[in-house]
Image 1 (cartoon, helix red, strand yellow):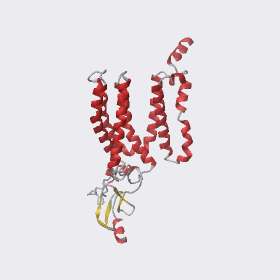
Image 2: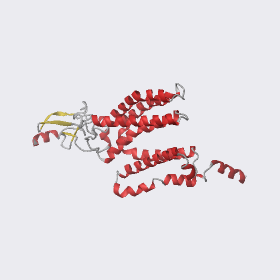
Image 3: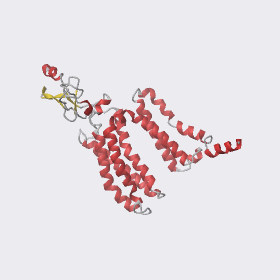
Image 4: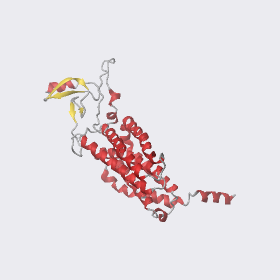
Length: 309
């Protein structure tokens, strides 16, 4: 056993390893089977760890991405038929929820709402195809594998199920309830999904590793920008106008949840316990906007400029 490990340690590259069979290391150096990765001794080891909270937050972010895009395009193309939009929002939520549950049930261990994974150690774990070694500088030893199993492929599988569920449920629902819209307008939110699903799939395939480390900051920045744009477009300049409509409160609390999600994700990179008080800053951007909106009103700035001249 010890001699086998010693021989296996000669495997080149970061991700090449030998397969262990019945307690002994066998075969030549090469790619590890799916669900395994090479350990320090260059022996393929089964992924048996439980994902960390940060991993679950990353998966949550990638799962929310198509749902938020669904909601945005449903709202964009639904016009003034709020009842139609509400049902489509609920259907999109159902589609993504069912897809997430089915994806988890089909991932090992099969039949359970839990997964086993390999721990993410560095950015290169997401891009093993760039680290295939050439021991003799002529022939390349191909050791491309999913070193972050299953964080890379589980998102792609989830997107596939989301697309299938949407095509099964949404057209029938839209055709039945969106009668007030034109024949082309009523299906525009579905057409938009057929565009953005390939985009988010390529985004995960190419930039999954970058998104893994950057998603907390992406959530925080985008939620701040979209909240400011929404409040500006809705001409919200006081608490009275903010709470006058239920829809505005729903949008506000949704953005607050995203603020908190981003803050917690960032804190997990350091120490969560010491950073939880930062959640008290979640309402801060909204309070700042309302407090300063009257000073940045364009009509006021223009009137003050003309009065000086």
